[in-house]
Length: 349
Image (cartoon, rainbow, N blue to C red; front, side, top):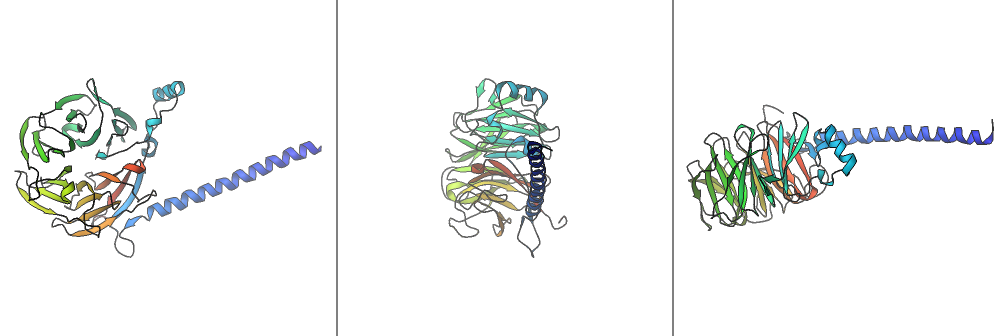
């Protein structure tokens, strides 16, 4: 055997050993990561877990969605789309099959069809391109509402992404939040600059409005995010009022909670609000980089999340929504991802 052949054989063996050892290291790393992610629960043991981390989504592949044959062909010709990753997600609406994400950084709403394994985008309403789509809400029959704060309009789309209505008023100034009550066919629009909530039918016919600028119950100081509970009540993030206000279906005040401060249970920079099946109220706080959970009377029950970039950590989080299975979706805006958690009910640990 020549010296050159010996060198070649030795090189192959070294590469093979290196590949095997790298493979073992990668496997161990994946197992370690899976173990650490599975153990992300709040509160920490030995207390019973009530919130559990599920996954984070930054791009379609994270949700198990692969490009179609046509999309792969386009990528080979035009190059891979650099906008596949979220830019600055703010608003979320979700079912167990479809995820809608308002991404004003990309000037579009991203749609992940988890059941079909497909993705699409809504970039415009008719011929009008989105400028700042900041909020989304599920509508009737699988449709979705999109609020564009710059255009000062709310658009209604059907389940296939076709425009079916444009909701615009001269009084609209900066719509920043939307919520739909399917039981009563009511659409609520938070107009932060007008300091009021507009009320429409699902088709966009005006019904009335709630509130004005002020500090008393029922008045607002830049309302931003909305949620409708299973009880039909409307929950409003009153951003510079540093509180959450709660309204009955007839528009009367049902309650409020929150105080400005930096201690647990205080409100510093409130963002998204959501309600689970048991009536717990989830409030995102961008200054705390956390989600605080309150009972109906405003008593703090639990907080999860902290500043950072790892799973279960946030960087200026924004919107939040909860689906029918009590999965919690948080728009982790500056980490450019959606983080998904699960509420563990006492009857389903």
